[in-house]
Amino acid sequence: MAPMISLYSASAAYRSGPSAGRDRGRVNSRTPGGGAVAANGDLYVADFYNQRVQRLRPDDTFFRQWGTTGKVGIGAGNVFAADFYNHRVQKFSPNGAFLTTFGDKGEGPGRLMYAMGVAVAADGSVFVTDFGNHRITKWRPGKTGG
Image 1 (cartoon, rainbow, N blue to C red):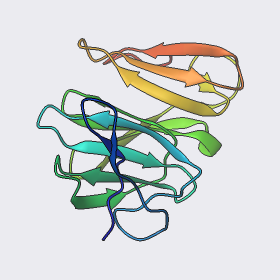
Image 2: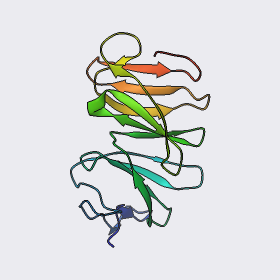
Image 3: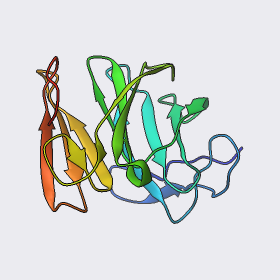
């Protein structure tokens, strides 16, 4: 299978590139929504229009796929996926087991309008780019609401 990641040398010379598609290890060519790298070097890629997260090994080999997604972030060993059209964030184990979800459609605290991006801080706080509400929301571990 053709690689999904574009590779460049240290001098910025192109070496190889991705192929588009719905097959494992390929992404919709217009919409790789984002990526995050785990401590072991695995790459989690949000494949927006194919509605999944794919996990690749450091050598670009396919490992696993799951879920519905926008962007991904990694925190405390877990994978967080912004679920754009469902106005929420989904939390998965590193192997793709669904753990929980947070957020709901709306404008007030704990509400999201098109969760577009997600990042996780060292303390476990989850920051969500809330496209429709024009803000970034901070979710704290063990707390309810944003």
